[in-house]
Length: 466
Image (cartoon, rainbow, N blue to C red; front, side, top):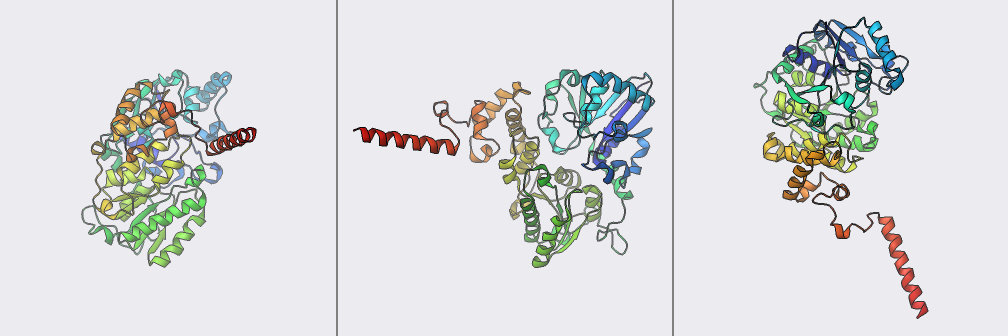
């Protein structure tokens, strides 16, 4: 009598689980539990996924919907994990709280490298695990070293086919098998969520506004609105707030330059309201009709209702659902800056940024936007990500050294090397690093300055003796 526990923290993740269930990716279980975790900084003031519009369309896939926040209260689910000595006590407590008895448990979790997934898998020691990945990070290496007590229990990585033909790298060190959640089933789930979403002011389908045209009947792309996607990167300390606002302005100007005179902006749910004010001022200057959509809906609802002629973002997964699943034009902004800013090098956002920079056109390159075509094979993306993945996590994926050396040896050019740091290549003894005979030269400018001054003083002292 197996009980399957699905852990989810976003509506997009819950939709992925619903699609996997509908597609028959799981064997029948005697009981299915959706365990909801609200990881917002202030979960008391932020609605959980089970309170969001559209969730009711997913509810019937599960026998019970339970709250991880309530189970671990007063601890925050994004910062708490059990002490090793308390794991047995926590399992007994949860089995009693959730009426699990002695039934075997099968866990289906997200983001296994961090809590709360790591906490849940720690508590149910020995339970088999499947991981589902709903974003571009699945194409990169496991961000943290996973203990074999957990890693060897993971059989599969279920993922969406966001970049057709590209194989995920996540958890490959444990031999976990990548399994695609069928796109057509996922789109059907998203359509159900979209149908249940409320009317959005200014968005087609709202009272007094016509519905969006059906796919294939949209007409010229510039006759349709553009959609800008905010990500709130300043909250991750990747950019400053002013730099992020500048990215939004570049998105708007790029859409305007491509001929769009109606623009919708979807800010990140936790972004401050001021992020849209400069956009409003700039839209007035450009003569663009701007609508800010701050309702808590997934971007795919807007794809269905707007059928935008252009979607612009930085490195959001939603750019690839737009391009791969809905056939929409997409463009990127700011990825060249982020490739330089992401620290440390093993930052897990590096792979999504790399994919977007390599495959998607920059919004200012009008010819590339018009001619865009996602072709990972032609771009050599798998080889590039293998090299980037090894450089990010060489201890997790030591077997990727030879492919990384081969790729870097064959692709020594400015375009490819922008994805790597020379110091990183040098430390790992990879092609493109500083030659060994020059490795003694300090890379810090201040250190080099001190060395020059010391040498000058030595010369002066020698001259004085003479």
